[in-house]
Length: 199
Image 1: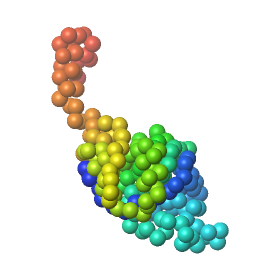
Image 2 (image 1 turned 180 degrees about the vertical axis):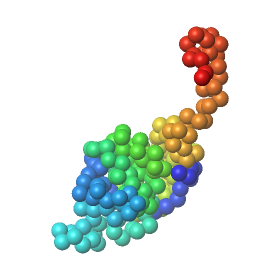
Image 3 (image 1 turned 135 degrees about the vertical axis):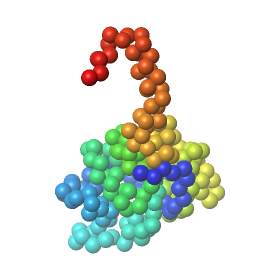
Image 4 (image 1 turned 90 degrees about the vertical axis):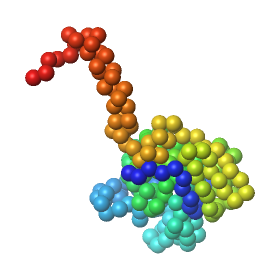
């Protein structure tokens, strides 16, 4: 996974609360192999009419290059399916801006290079009223810049570090190898009886 610090792209507004993982990718598509790609399943039922054809009035269908999604509170709630994140990433999204997220969804997002950025409810309402619009998201400064303004966002500092460096949990642990080795050596010096002999 490649790290990133800034991202510029077109924003799509989804002015709904409690968008859960089953709405992001319905369960009936879960048997699809990951290698087949999940982009076509993103918001599948919202994007289509009853006959299965794409609804031209649904904003995302006219924004094929959108890479930032703006939503309302409790985005990604529901089941823990990581496929919801796969669908967003495979469809080209790099950032979701919302006042709050389902915790497991947010953790899965970071693990796949997708930023779950918490913005205030007022900021979400303001941005949703202006979509579609072009945004610049700056992880280092933790702010979103757009024509005529800028807003801050919040993210767990460890998640921010992982996204900026393109790290997974193993990479994060490796970043502390010096401290880990020093601790292990100090422990062995203080309590040699606790360390099994090497074979």
